[in-house]
Image (cartoon, rainbow over all chains, first blue to last red; front, top):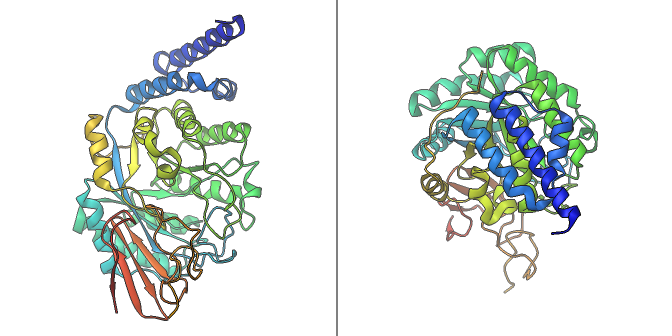
Length: 342
Length: 70
């Protein structure tokens, strides 16, 4: 082996060992410098990185995997210009708007979700934020879904006021999703109709009003390694219960349609880094995993993931829930509801 | 009699688009118009408001056979 390669391997082992001590023995979070160093390890060290992330996940969260189903209850026609999203009304040939689904359609989807063994059902709306009618419909639906299915109900309805957040919390919403998507310094290249700070403020409101915060990321939009490390620091600061990890699946008609999906090895590296940065979080496989990871999907489950969306996504299709449930059975990972490490 | 419109790009007699198992159709095969698609956890339903057709799959994968009704 060449001296340089030996030196690199030795340095990689040292970095991985230092991270293991910090996260498992000392139970402290890694800082930006430590994460950056791990992010720049050569590809040949990705299996060691994922093995460490899996050990950290087991040490902090245990073996349980949380399963969730999601439903777009109001699709398309969104006034915002999130460049990755096919539901924006600002781009050419994106999805036609459909009205709020009726209660029977929502309940039917919740029952489908419950049959997969899921514990969480999330209603998602393509809106900037809810108007009074929309908010009241959501508040009316939550107890009905809970009573009919026994599922915890989550909502994703955009930017909230404090009064709206409080009413959703009082109405029984278990978890509220509001993604940062990307680092503060990269966000203006992806969204211009609202600011990263507006998203961050809603995330703080969600926590303050007593709902669990689900705050995710979307990788593959052209952000750099530095942007990703910056985002990890911002998520550490926000301390969400759940982080859904999405991979860009380029949508026709959107400004990001020409981007290529991440490669599977890079995706695995970043799954591991999200776990190492956020050791106690519910780290959920979300959109784009099928087209990004392809045959590597089970490997993500041993790289730090401990939750997944089963079945279809908001506007695209996922693989069969049976395939995911078989994967979990084969990995001997039990299914159950999770909550954040306090 | 013309050919069919592509479910994905809406072009007539398209031979460029390859069917992905992870995409619901976007265009009506009869008229090429954008469909209103509802995706739910284990299936999808697509409506063409011009042709008044409904296509759908109860399966989670788009590779499942289509059923069509008036």
